[in-house]
Length: 212
Figure (cartoon, rainbow, N blue to C red):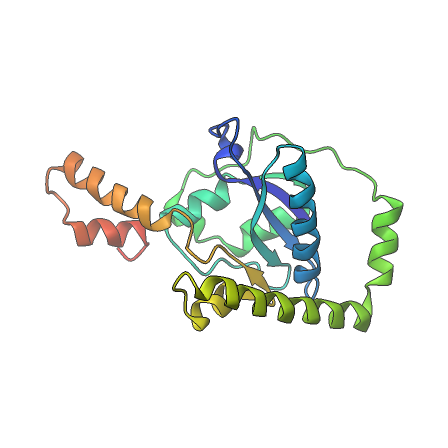
């Protein structure tokens, strides 16, 4: 229902050899089918020298972001939709808390993608995967990929609970939390230096995570 560019490429701050981070919104019960297709697309992209990274996926039934912080607010606000403006508008409405971190948030002046008619193959695929058949296929893909992620990520020290929380039926997020921890540390260090001790490190962390 939505494809958006996020991360450094969304703000014209990416390297020539950097990856293209994607934020996707799908129908409920179709997230893992979409994820499996993007994995195939990623492999084709690498053959062309393009590193596509679908690192954040939500369904229209679970649009709320659970990890609330200045970092998460900025990442969400700077996303540039390529397709699916109505889904993006619903996403922003479901995450009004972002305005608490970014009170001057505005979507004015952003590039607006031109509406495109659905391709016949897209319509055919949606009909074939509609109903129970699609639900069963999505559930099977989710289970298979979850087994794969447990095996792959357990070697890097991630616990089963962390893996299952990052790869749920209705959302897939970066298990490491992206650059949130590093940005939080930099925010505290810079804030401490600029404010000359006016706020403590704990108070600055509270501001960053919306606890103040």
